[in-house]
Amino acid sequence: MATSRRVAKVSASIKREISQMLVSDIKDDRVGAGMVSVTAVDVSGDLQHAKVFVSIYGTDEAKAETMAGLAAATPYVRGALGRRLRLRRTPEIMFKEDISIEQGTDVLNLLSRLKHERNSVDENGIPTVVPSAVEDEDGL
Image 1 (cartoon, rainbow, N blue to C red):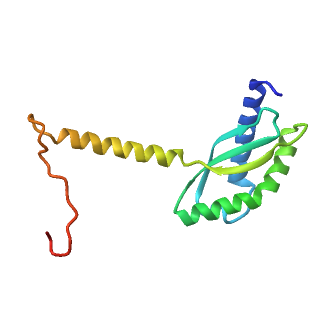
Image 2 (tube, one colour):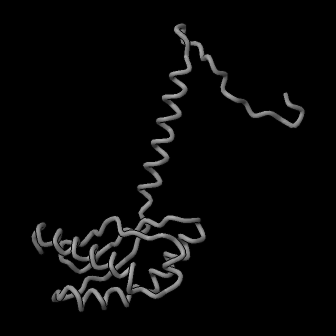
């Protein structure tokens, strides 16, 4: 088992190198379909496996296409990491989509809506703004 300092150092190195590869080295057009950035790398304690979390900006189709391109580029990425990092054994790479940014945005929108709803109550606790109801075709 590697020390936690070693694991963190290898994780940071992998993140830096893969980020650089996404910008200049990976030629697969599918990877360029959405704007991709590496958000985190989780390396196992024995340095044999690495989960690379990527954030992809774009439509759902572009995200799926980008993930397919990253999956196809995995052997190239692992080989390039082996040459660049000079580790005894290069970890197996697995790309995962990081949706934490989208989830954070959703939570912020919910909090903003709750704040707006609470501010639209008079001193008796009665809403001053009536929430919009879904109308049927007759307008009722």
